[in-house]
Amino acid sequence: MNSVFRAHAAALVLFSCLFLARPGAVLANPNVPVNVDYVYGFGDPQPQRWMNQNLYVAVYLAALWGGIFLPTHALLRRIALPAGAWSAKPPTP
Image (cartoon, rainbow, N blue to C red; front, top):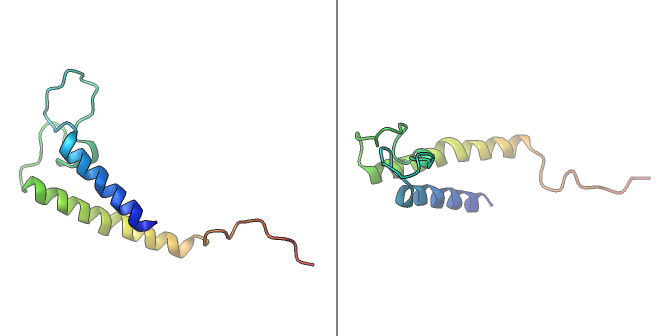
């Protein structure tokens, strides 16, 4: 399940990078969000310029996986009960 989540997250980031509006884009509808998932940097007025865009997206994905997804997964595996632990069990005599 963890690999499915990581693949889904990567697909959404790549979709945002390829098909959604960039920062600074002039759109007919001003309510359309730009820079979804921060794939162009952390500002909305213009994209980041200190790194190649493709490299930025690769580093962004690596930071998400290594800094958010894996530590959260490790923490939850440590503190959460296994699946099915809360299921109803017959009373013991």
